[in-house]
Amino acid sequence: MKIVTEHHGDGRACVVHLHGEVDMVTVPEVREALESAMNRGCDNLVLDLAHVSYMDSSALGLLVWVDWKLAPREGRLVLAGADRNVSRILEISGLVSAAPCISAASDPEDALSGFELTGPPAVPLWTRELEFPAHPDSLARARAEVCDLLDPLGMPETVFFDVRVAVGEALANAIRHGSPRGANDPVSVSVSAYEDRVVLVIADHGAGFDGETASDGDPYASSGRGVMFMRALMDRVDFTPLPGGGTAVTLVRHLAALDVTRG
Image 1 (cartoon, rainbow, N blue to C red):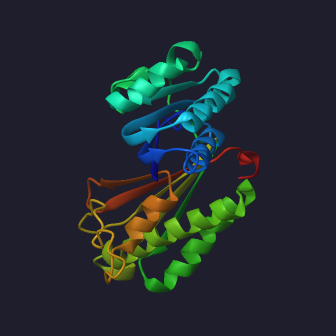
Image 2 (cartoon, rainbow, N blue to C red; image 1 turned 90 degrees about the vertical axis):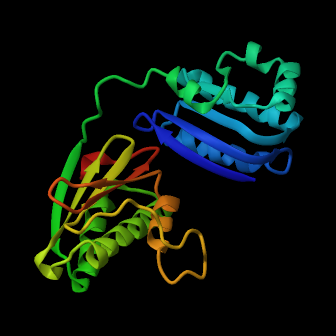
């Protein structure tokens, strides 16, 4: 079973893409992914079933559990893209019409359009700005100073390590590839804490990079794993060209509860 989660609308909605068969063996893995999304503040779940080839009664039990979890949060679960066979199982169960929090959609895009995710943009509770010379000797200090800002937030140890690795990879790329004049090109880091997530932006002065990894998933590739790590460890990774040249890499990690008052 392959599971990929994408967050939307500042984390208030997410799409969980499933690839494979949903049965008594894989249900615990799917449940863990859904629970993780809800714990990070996602109250509007889209379960993408387009690549699910089989679903049994244990999967229906999972949907009942999600409905029970979302009801007090006034959340919703949308089952999207199910093929004819999976749709028939859902129809026989009667869940879509009976469960108050569960509905169906033709595809994830249609499901997301039904959520009210507009509204005013979230304002960070605090933001800190750092700048370092684009030199390998600055890398360890840059990582350490970013981690010093994040440490008071009280992240779980594993989450803190994930963010540390992703930030380290982004900084290393900025120093290695995004600074044609070496130490004369500064690398800037912006760290923002929100109620439900942290957002880090690493900007350089290079020729630009679109985020396409050179390794292409090849474990024996000589380079290109940094972007792969960033995408695997963070909930969202964006590469944006800067007007004056260079690239801004935005890393987002959603969190269940953050001690933002200590930033």
